[in-house]
Structures are given as structure tokens and as C-alpha cells.
Amino acid sequence: MSWLLDESHLADLSRGATLLGTGGGGDPYIGRLLVAEAIKEHGPITVLDPDEVDDDLFVIPTAMMGAPTVMVEKIPRGTEPVLALRTLEAHLGRTAQATMPIECGGLNSMIPLLVAARAGLPIIDADGMGRAFPELQMETFSVYGVHASPMVVAGDRHETVIVDTGDDDVRMERLSRACAIQFGGAALIAEYAMTGADVKRVAIPRTLSLGIGAGRAIREAREEHRDPFAALAEFFAGTIYQNVRPLFRGKVSDVERRTVGGFTRGGCTVAGFDGGELELRFQNEHLLALRDGEPVCVVPDLICVLDDTSAEPITTESLRYGQRVVVLGISTPPIMRTPEALAVFGPAAFGLEQPFVPVEELVSERFSEPVAV
Image (cartoon, rainbow, N blue to C red):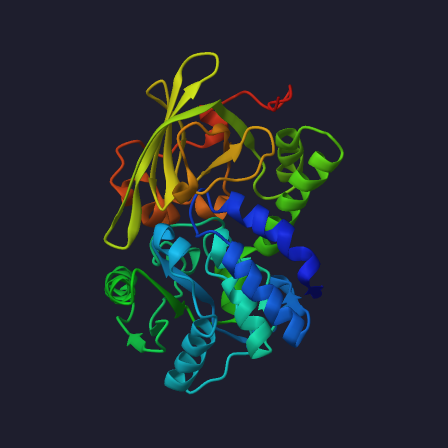
């Protein structure tokens, strides 16, 4: 069933999408402001359930690409994503009937909403990552046969580039990344044009609703003075992201972060309050968590860093020495754990030697006791 998204949903979505972004996806704060202004001007946004869209509906997903560290300072004009959409429409000779996120995390939960409001389009409650990933070919769309090309990369000076590499989505990522770097490290894109039938086959369903629900679970638990981490575990248990595991609690003791090749790369060390150490490695998003040298969560499962009192999610570009944090591992849905999917966005795709093992097998403990102080 379709529903209307308005300003009242944005705070919860921003919080939940940052959680699902696993440290990446860009800080949604600026995007949230842009969407709120667009909704004030154009009214609420119609959200379509992916199971109910017409098979011949023509969908063009929209997003932002680049290093999250750049996005903190390089604020978009707000017109670029619609420009990317219109340029791709003109190139394809078809008019989009809906847009959709390519990922449900961070800023990229907001960009398609901005496009939907300003272009007068509905948005589909689904995406192609179920979290955030650093590279554009790392999509269930690509894994299951819908390719990104042709795509459009738009800059903040209203320049556009059309990239068409046929079925080679890895080459598409490399060329569009080079464009984004030339545009200052970040750009707005339109890609993965598909039909409603494709959406039903290749997308991860209802992830906008998932983000809103996760953000709401944290907020309501705080308002009711309940443990927000246990509330998150309870919420996710009723979704296709069933398993939430506490990985570690402690203080950030070291952060190493650099912007290289259009990505934010680095690592973080968390010293445990009761001893021990957790090491995190990231490329925009957290990829691997090692507790005392042993893996406890690995991509594509979600590694989420949250403030240990408020449960506010912390992005990789916001990690700072001295932060008191709780680190969670969250299982991804089955569509993201197939051999075909792991070949595209499993550990080996990032040069990690650690094989994929589901977080629920690596960590047995659940939230039987409150985690927060």
C-alpha cells in the first residue's frame, strides 16, 4: 500500500538511515534540510510499496557519490540530482515515472526524496544495497542482472557527464568515480534505470520504512527511558535484518582516516571499559570488526557504531578520540548473502582475507541485559 512521507518522518529516517549506513553513506543532515524545504514547497512524497508497482513502471534511481569526508564541507546546491535525472531521461528518450534509492544509508536515503519532491515523482520503498557500500557496482541490482549504464554524473556547476560501459559495472564505477573526483570529490548521479518488474526481482524491499522504524525505535526508547540498544534488537527481530549482536563497548582510543581516490579509508580502535580492544576497518563504511584480533563481524553484515548513552549512530568521518561507543553487528537479508552477492560485495571484493561468516554465527550473545549506562 502506498503512503505519504512528510517532514514528520525525516528525523527518524535520518537517524535510522545513518545506522543502516554502517558508518558511511554520507551524513544525512544537509540532505534532510534540503528535503524538508522541498516538502514545504511541493507537499508530501508518495511512497510506493515495491510489491505493488506496475511491472512496466519506468524507474530511475538517484543518489550522491563520493567521499563522506568531502560531503561534510562540499554542500550540494540541491538542483544537481534532478539535473542528473532529466539528463538521463533525455539520453534514454523516456520519462521516469518513479525514483528510488540505490542505498538506504545516510545521505543517500535523502537524495531520492529530494528528487521525488522537486520532480513530482513517487519514490519506491526499496534499494539496491540494504545498507551503504563504497562502490556503485556493489548493488543487488547489478548482482541480479540490472546494469547501471548509461548513467549521468552531475556536478555543482551544472556540468553533466554520461557514462556508458554496457554491462561492465566495475568499469562504470571507475569512470564515474574519476568524474566525481574532478567535480571536487562528490557528485550527484542517476543510474540503474529499470522497470517495476525489475524492482520486484532485484531490489531489497521496504528499506525506507526500515530506516524510519529503526530511528523511531531509538527515539521512543529514549523518551520512555528504556534501553535503546535492546529496543533496536527487538525492532530488527521483526524484519529481514533479524539478528542484532552486541560486538563491543568502550572508548575510541585511535582513529586513522584519509581521503584517497574518492573514498574515505582508514580504521578505528576502541578500548574496552572492562579490557580488550576492538579494531574497525573502513572504506567509507565499516567492513571488518576484530575483537582482540578475532573477527566478530564482516561485510556485508552491518557494523554500526553508536553513542553509548543516546544510541545516536556515528559516521566514519565523525569518529573522534574519546567517544564512548557501543558497536553492533546486524545481519543482512538472504538476498545479500548468496554466492553471487558475496562475489560483488563480500570481503574479497575489498581485499580482505577474512571469509564471510554470518554475524549470528560469529557472536552468540544477545541483548539479555541492558548495554547502555
